[in-house]
Amino acid sequence: MNSTLPLPSTRLAVVALSGAILLASMAVSITSVALPALSHSFNVPIAAVQWVVLIYLLSVTISIVLAGRCADLFGQRFILLCGLTIFTASSLFCAIAPNLTTLIIARAIQGIGGAILMALPISVIRGMVSGERTGSAMGLLASMSAVGTALGPALGGLLIAGFGWRSAFVLLTICGSILFVMAIRAIPASAPAHKTSHKLDLSGVFLLAIVLFLYALISSGQQNVLGLRLPLIIPAILLMLILFIIVEVKSPSPLVPLQVLRNPAISASLITNWLISSVMMAMLVVGPLYLSFGLLLGEAQTGLIVAVGPVVAALAGIPAGCFTDRFGVKHILTAGLAAMSMALICMAYLPVQIGITGYILSLVMLTPCFQLFLTANNTAIMNAAPEHQRGIVSGLMGLSRNLGFMTGASVMATIFITALGQEDLVHATVNSVSSAFTVTLLTAAGMALISLIITLVSLKK
Image 1 (tube, rainbow, N blue to C red):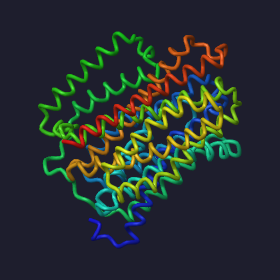
Image 2 (image 1 turned 180 degrees about the vertical axis):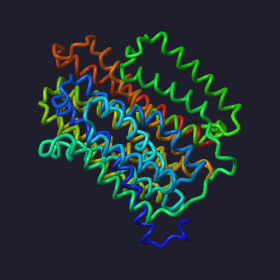
Image 3 (image 1 turned 90 degrees about the vertical axis):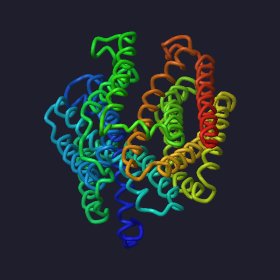
């Protein structure tokens, strides 16, 4: 495909795909700063408006595999344009929502569009660049994801302060409209990669949605919304997962072709992606707690230090892609995971020993390692994916990342509280908070080492 496109069109397509990743990431973070304004505007508690953020993440998680499968069945360009349409239209509905219920429904629909914008650029761009430049393309997309995450709160804060919370969704609407025009002009029409009938496995979609919904409830601590307890939810998840596998085995056009997961390179990439995403979420959840209650920093200082991570990630993405192209996926994967393990060990001890300086130094070491892994891992899995299944594989990558984020937010916070010995952080001593932080980060380092072992084993096959 690369040879059939004029160079300017290729560049415009890359810009559109990068913008799609940035927009979907920004849609998560830009609303986090709007929660107080939403609570005041609709006169509801913060616990209620938190669903504006949660429903988007839940919708993305449930929809992302379906988005990839639809791309394989109906064509990547068509589904990408559908995603931009859904995202843009729902952003407009968010901007004009008259009440919180309408806003939450619009955000759920926006999450479906966001899932497509997160899943498809990786598979689309793989078919538009030459093999020796795949790493650079993946690095660019990784940078855009980090930029979107970092840019959201900054832009959202400025807009909300000046024009109110609706302006944040107006911005998403305008950006989505611009990207839609760019995508129509630059991304070439593509026939469906799948040669069989365009039949969607609706039973598989339904069962997987239930599994992911229950998993998300456990991870977000919202299991009591349905009146269910943990001992009931876990067996329910296992039962639904078994039913899903049975349906997929018997389906002539499965949502998730199980033979894809039998590929060692693909299965290893998905597992390590899940583990490392859990590790990085630990930094986003436990890190601010340590800064506030371990180093006794104020909100402004904590926010500035936390922002170092996304900024470094944005700067490291493209170089990570260049290194992947230059030295190869295998070397960058192993080097990135090994370095990440060491950086996490440094993070466990340096802040406790030398304070803020140690935290920043460790964060600056850790974040580029994550970008190295992410870029090399995305490159490895897309190189291993058959051309007619790149959409579903890209969707599975997005799913494993989101499941990792949910797992990390839940499990790592639980490890931190357990090591702390009490749930009341306000009355915890600095030493106990520091000790709990060290235990949590050493656990994260162990997960990175497990990922390294899985990668090394898969590379030998």
